[in-house]
Image (cartoon, rainbow, N blue to C red; front, side, top):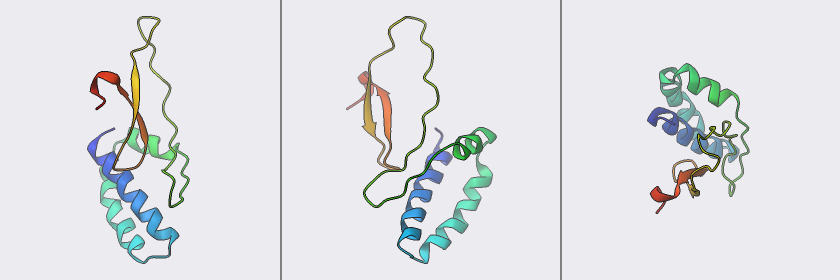
Length: 99
């Protein structure tokens, strides 16, 4: 994921949570998100169009992951799931990079 897509998802999460509670600030954030939307790539738009969103105060957004890559060897590298602080997603990361 690129920086603009991460920023869009982070703003969207905040906007959806505010919108759920009826806060008027959600509309202001939604308006500002347009600038990011138009700066995203066609691939980013396709990714955003295929996801499922579940908004609840205590639960993260649910986004389907793409198909896993095919590995040259029969054993994929070891990965660890970490929580992305910006949007609350569990993201697989190679174990050697996980802290």
